[in-house]
Length: 300
Image 1 (cartoon, rainbow, N blue to C red):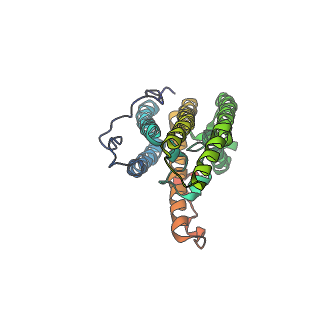
Image 2: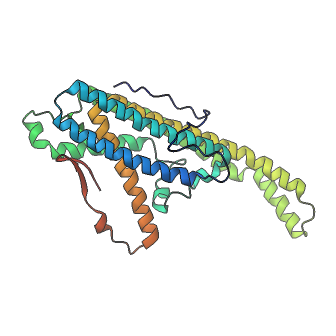
Image 3: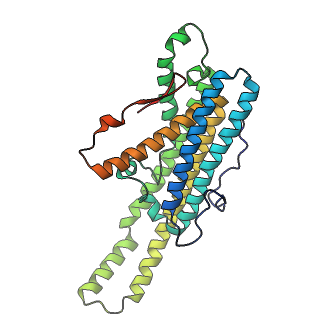
């Protein structure tokens, strides 16, 4: 499946959008953009579910696949917009992106370099595959095709496995880079500065302008390295999403994007509820499942 989307590059300017314009002044915040983006994602989720339902009743596959491709491209462009706008904010304050205030503590616990691990896209795909195979096992035994992810061909599975191994390797490379940057928190320049500033404070302070300037110089270098890692991680996240979609048929990609949006939105809601109510929150009220015309998409 070929997507007509513009490749994301970390150093590109954010995409302008009438619905979600990129932040351009100090009065705007990424928090505001993120909340607007979530609302748009929820709207796209409804469109995806409707498209999946319509596909089950439409026997004109060519016409239906064309409509699905347009919707998929629209959804992918929204993800591209998110990462381009995020890249703009990373240039302003990269450190804030490592502990985002717009996410809950629950979401923070799953973060890897400012976002979800790229390999989670593959794990999500495997989870949906298992769920849909279980739900359609009777039909599969009888040789009836379902059109969803339970119909993945062996060629597709080989490509997914190859992609998985590639992304695991690239994740490890970035994780090692992050570890090296984090270790510089105790390098010689930092320790010398901490000793010098501490002694100055013990001796009554004085003109600390020179020390402050040196601190800024050292920290700027480290912040620059952290920013570069964020750009690389975001690029890998987006390219992994696109690579998964390229392997799938249009309707399979729709089911994948439905599950991805549902998982992201539900985890955000669960985290907010847990943060508001505390440890006494009742998780039973949030259990359930989503179905598209009898086809189990995702359990939560």
